[in-house]
Length: 119
Image 1 (cartoon, rainbow, N blue to C red):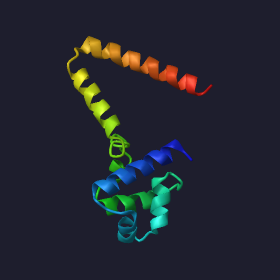
Image 2: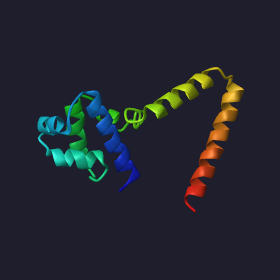
Image 3: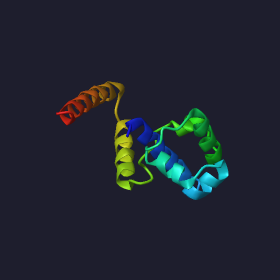
């Protein structure tokens, strides 16, 4: 399964839960099967642009919000949300030079982790 499809699916799940809808309720609203919605949310379905638009309408969001991954994993992982909140708070206390240094460090660290995970 594609990482992109998984991200799209996780975001659809986040937005659906945020609206208080079940998979069945969303599927009924947009005339799709509940199993199809489940497959989309698990990243097992490669949806068309028209289906993306239907899902966005059912969730009462714009299609670009379905593709905005900033909220993915936050609803299912409160520890991650708390960590990100603390990091953000700490970053707000830094000056521009310190932020640029931290950004460079994060890029290097990310590349290091990615290169070691491929071994």
